[in-house]
Amino acid sequence: MSGLIPVRQLLDGDGIEWRRCLEGTGIAPADLDRDGLTVTLRQEERLFGNLLALTGDPAIGLRLGRQYSPQRYGLFGYAMLSAPTLRHALVIATRFGEDLTFTWLRLGLDIGGRDVVFSFGDRVPLQGAVRDFFYDRDTLAVKVALDELLGEPVPITRVVLPHDGHGLASRYRRAFGCPVEFNGALASSLTFPTRLLERHLPFRDAATSERLQAQCQALLARFRQRGDLASEVRELIVGQPGYFPSVEVVAKRLSMSIRTLRQRLAEEGTGYQKILDQVRHGLACEYLENTQLPVQEIARLVGFDEPGNFTHAFKRWAGLTPTAYRAARIS
Image (cartoon, rainbow, N blue to C red; front, side, top):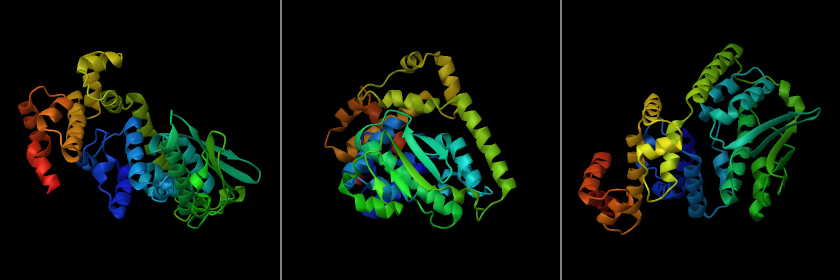
């Protein structure tokens, strides 16, 4: 969940309530402090769509991209920082970057005689302003990473982005330190001189880098073996507003038995009811804070036939009754 910390910091700095960014995501504000929370693509699309609407800034991805230093990527980031040369670090980036960072984009690396081109392309279906946001954020995050890896600004010679620039060409030029070409064919790219590849990194430690890469590989193997079933379950629940499928329905949609579903979720440290409660809690908080709907109606919207059962469940989630929670947020 640390991938959302920069978003929270940005909103706090702009005086925007963080919970407004969570509207419609099924994520409760309290979830943000919980270790191991996974976020689906659909939730991120809603969250960043809210962010774009709240700030009115179509290029806000640039502001966020500046915040994604290599250290934010944990083992993967430190494996790059301790690599012997920039070339080694970029090999690590392409090996693990798609799986161990926050990007939803496909990574590419093309090393030519004079230039290195680091590129992004669509890996999952993305559209509109949120797609532009991801490309802005992640392309600038590469520039930030290159600067930190070398310990000095990297001379970027060319940047291509797959949108029209929102009439903000000068802002993009300042962010990347070079002219930016817009409306690129389906992808973004960032170009810098090949001669930089053999530069020694200031924090190089080959043994440490190798050890961290081994840990990244082990982590990736676990991901690929088990997958992130909790995210798939959460996406199935969030994907149909007002409808909360039973564990039997979810198991059938995932083509597995109920027993297998429960076992695999337990291996990930969660369970179907726990995921369902997290989604219901997030939606209930949103309705209580941002609407004047009566508690009885909110109970129905989050899947409770009896308001009393909803009140009991909400008190277990939040430590307050729905009425007390709403009063505390309004006061």
